[in-house]
Length: 352
Image (cartoon, rainbow, N blue to C red; front, side):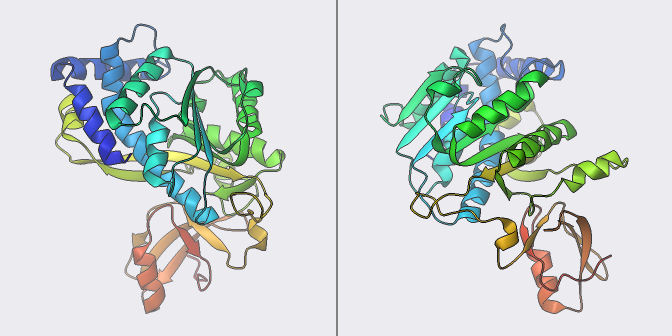
């Protein structure tokens, strides 16, 4: 299963309804979201609305999921993920993302979703994609935190675009339950908005308090400097962007002539320290790593003097570094970097 397969499956699904009806349903889904209802989960939503939701949201959220999982694999090295649990699974978007990225399919995949309509849609998309009969994929109609005691831990646990649908009082219990179910790594993804970042930041604090090691995007275990900047009246929040091509169906349903979109997101990868005998390698605290790195938390900006690099540093500070044009090797490196990359901090000693 690849993201190209997902595009083909969605294109076939779109043929079930007239384009003008899908466009209307897409607008209604968006309006519901703006009114504070969980996206695509309002009780009046019909199969038409769910199909419209899948057309306009699944390609973007799957692309983001794949980008984050690539960072996960880059952080732990080449390893086998033997089991994958996706919470708030919706129509199974993160399964598509994982299948497109993981070197080998997990031996066991569990998709947890409370809405039977999304489960039905996800199963249909899997069937059209050729994986419906796979014996290692299990759908379960349930929600956290009530079901956490009946599930076994999985190597990889993902929870994408779900925290924002929770009542505020449920956030902490759900994050704790997700961590309980995590054998090795927990991946959280939310929209790249101030609110989405706030949810990720809250989850980060909870996970650090339980002993989790933050693997990405943070290069440290300290307090989040973005939150401190907000407290001082700043407008920064930690988020990233994934550029993807807009499909023909997406352009027809949502309108617009631009052939791409930038999906903004915030994310967190938290791991447990594990034994070398486990399926994934042990995760070390960043302080023990021989080559410290920073995280590029904004787009590089080319200036006359060089390239500005907004960085989150291993000591928990935000710093703007300047890769000087006269330092040719460093300048070339800086120009090749993209928002969200890890940056070796050796030779980055030119503060603005």
